[in-house]
Image (cartoon, rainbow, N blue to C red; front, side, top):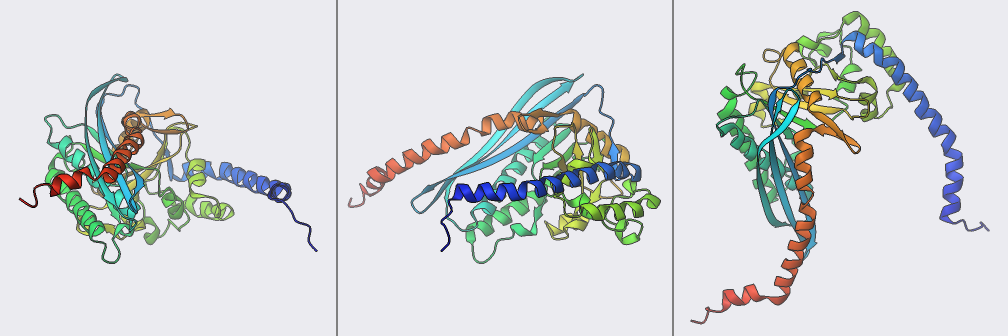
Length: 378
């Protein structure tokens, strides 16, 4: 008969067995990353960016957040977007204003997370549209999240609300770029740069670098201005085999040094099914990762355009401005407008909690229903 074993005893045994092997495996991956990172720089897949000594620009950032609470077999939710307008003069920071939008409604269990993401994207573009219609649009406009939609956001089945949110988001994205393209960089040399900033899909450069970039097919993944040195790529591919199992985030963090960016790549080549399809096919989607400091996590920058629009100088100038405007707070580093917006968006949770309590009380008292029916007989 087996002797019963408590969970504490099981965990103690497993930790003693797994600790040496796990620690050794992680240390080997770190050593391999440290050895291969300089080769990325030599090949041109990672580039050092000159951080501007004096940052002089007008920068706006749009952050979004949504939260839910259960109620009556479904959920109440609140979704909000906040735009912070900042001005940098000789590295001195001043706020110029803000704008916001919000939505409170109920939602069921069906496709809850995707529908909320679509609402956040739509709200972000609403604020971006207002910014571009203002008297003084910013030099750089950052959206916290993607600029276009992935095909995974397409609603399945007959979810009417989800389908409506998806179609509204598509139409708003399409209309924004069509209406404001003449005021946006790089189509307008003095126009506003619109970029999406995200922490997801960090493995794009890892997948690209493991291809044979000496071939025409491999080179199609990268922008022509950032093509690597062909003779160094072959040896690099052989070294990457030893760290093929490492996590994407750890890989990108390991090859990126301070004040650096990866080579720019075609995101629509990595994910061909982006929406709106007509906009993506016509303009193209460009991406690169950047990292400002030793403690900072890498961030993904998403831009619309292609080889004919973006040059190495343009990309380096944008990366340098983003690095200068990104500061460390707690355990993560994001551009300053997002950090300032986050302080206000944190209040959504408590707001929805109080709103939900009030809603429960109204449902319990049924006072609203009584007022609706009070004049029915007359």
